[in-house]
Amino acid sequence: METRLTVYFEEPFWVGVFERTEGKKLYVAKVTFGAEPNDALLDEYVLNSYDELTFSPAVESPIKEKADNRKRRFKIVKNAVREVGVGTKAQQALKLQRDLQKTERKAESKQKREEEAERKFAQKQQKKKEKHRGH
Image (cartoon, rainbow, N blue to C red; front, side, top):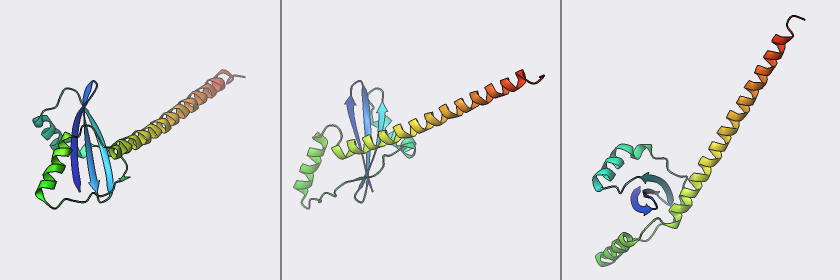
């Protein structure tokens, strides 16, 4: 299992994206920081709050071949550091997570709405009974 944190500026906040790969599966979690986070804050966040992150459902991710020579590895690391933002696989995973949370929210609000309507209906029926009790 490999985990990578990418921090970038997305107007007006700093955003951190945790990418966790297990085999060919990619899981992503997004965290919004207010001001620019320093290394100490990031270390503290990873140590204290990593377990509380909600990762997206798995997305298929091809395994990249590892380079054998050190010059090639150095070049890959240099290019990875230069990259800004999040990869498209991570964006897909985040979108999938947002969609799932949206459907959960909709279902929950629908259930609350129905329960409230049932409660009001029962209250009206009770009031109706009380009005006609003496006749």
